[in-house]
Structure formats: C-alpha cells, structure tokens
Image (cartoon, rainbow, N blue to C red; front, top):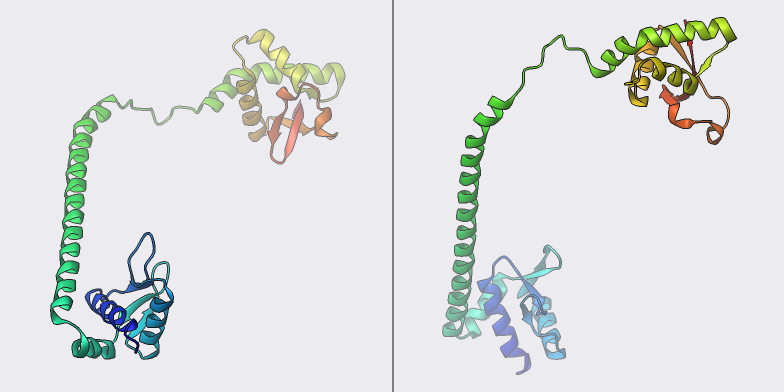
Length: 234
C-alpha cells in the first residue's frame, strides 16, 4: 500500500465504521463519500474492495459501501484511536441533531392534527343542523320532467302520426312542446324523452346518416349507443 493511499484508506474505514448503514464510495456535491474522486482516491477504493475491507450494498439511488470484519481489524491495527473516536462522536452528534429535528417535526404535526380535530368537532354540529331532510318518496328531477311534459309529448306524437304517418324529428317536437310549456328547456325535454323511452311509452329512432349532416344537432340525444333524432308513440 503506498503512502498516499494509506491515510485515505484509514480515513475511509473510520468513517465507514461510524456509518453502519453505508456511505457512497465517492463524494459528490450533494452527499459525502469515503474517497475523493481522484486517481489516488479511486485506487484506494479499489484496494479496499479488492482486499475485502469494504463491501458494497444496494442503496436508494446508488451502491453504498460498508466496512467488513477485515476492515475493522485493519482499522484497529493501523488507525489512530483518537481519530476514530472523534469520527464516532461527530456522527453521533449529527444523528442526534437529525433525531431532534424529526421529533420537532412530529410534534408540530401532532399539534396541527389536534387543532384540525378541534375545528372539525366545532363545525360538525352546524353541518348537522343545516341538513335538509329529503322525503324518501321524492321523485327525481327526470321523473318530474317526464310527468310534467309527458301529456304534451304524447299528444303531439299522436297528432303527428295521424297527420304525417312518420316519425317526428326532435327539433319539431321540441318546438311544439315549448309552445304549450314555455318553461321547457332542451335539457328537461331530453330527460322527459329518456324517461318515456325507458318506460316503453315512446320510441326513439336513430339518425342513420353521417353525424356531421345532422340538422339542428342540439336537439338530438344519445339513446343507448345511437344518436336519437326522431320519436314516435308506441
């Protein structure tokens, strides 16, 4: 072992002994390492691995190095006990500081959770008081639309069949319903058609041409997998 490698190896073994979880072989800008990334440092690292004074283990982002029994013996036989003890004390102080920081963070989180729990407990009574009971037998909006518009839709479809004998285009049907029910919107109209179609009171017929040729497409609606554009009474 050359004189240039000896101090690097002893220093690396001392730091590896103080970091049993593992340390990167080479230092970088964001984390310390056992050896400098120089020609001598690389040769010293290779010597430690070849002679099994260090071993590699998988790390989160790269391989880490840990000291072996052979490395501990080499350190004990050749290292400076005072320097080794100083390294151990330094690591212990660093870990103690990290633990204190973690404990402070955990305490802040506990206080925040307790405050949140208190706030929720204060709000819940007001939420309960603001709840509005909904009758069990209340009809859905689409059912109300169908019940309100059904007579007008069915009457117009019956008249249309008598006059033309064919299916009524939905734009024509909507305009006829809107004349007698001004409050009818396209959305309510569609809900009513779906309800009547679902209960078997009317047929909804699809547009069979290209979709880009649908006239007044706002009045068409989806019925199953088809775009419905006509309606007829059953």
